[in-house]
Length: 411
Image (cartoon, rainbow, N blue to C red):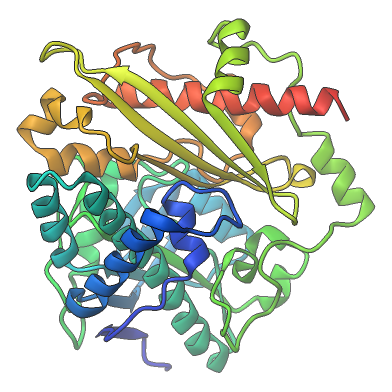
């Protein structure tokens, strides 16, 4: 019997791609940093190269089973219909539990920079640590591909608590499983709050499916992880990064599920029209995908109503795929200080900011899923409560939907 996989280690250096870092900073694809931004980015890279302690851990599950709505790993059930459907469609045989982290050093230094009233330095270091986490998840997936290739298996795209149809509240259960190491301990300390937020915040837990039915993946392009993987030097790539053009039949099916032009929004259309012009920036990539950036300006609900500003970054797949939501991020706008006056920030800044970064509603769904998305109505200007944060994500995604519908009508 093949010995079950277990990998762990620290990395002396990480090579975050400039374009990935730039994307997390909120700039459109293809943008080149210059001036002060280039200086701050260089400082963050240099600091992390000297002081950062990135790490990874991966362990193949002892047991694995699927139901229509649950994924049972080592006898622990996880409720994620989306993940269960993906694994079932690929006839997955097993799963690998993964944890990665950028280390606590960057968070501690970023917190110190904030206390020293250096918001720009704080923001660039925070975003670099986030880029490190994404990079670690990617290269850990590449290591799994290396192992899987030797065992006539294929690795499926990963999912994490907080992704589509997987409640972030299940994060503690996943961490308990990951802590059940076999031969090597976790390379770094990691903990989780009841809210599901990880500490250190610049960490991620994930589940990668494994399948021996490699032939099943060929017609299921959405399940080929290579098309979502930006790890350029990988020797085990089965498909180019981003998806190849579809057949005429596939394109017809995708167009049928594009955008509902007669959508009933939760927001007045005049407001959507104004926001799409004043707050939203859309940048089309060469492959047809879209980078959307939305700026939200609000105020705290108490503490004399301090103004605050957040940037929402959303990466959408191309039109012929139905504009799938590939990436989402919400962060304070560069230079914003108002968010630190929110009540929950004053109580526990790491808990609140971690929740804001972790939550990615409708991740992996087509943009049209925002129409009819049932969520609480919470018009508070702050981000203290989950309902308020979901309300704002709804406004952002509806504005993007509205803007793209207008583009569709001009085609």
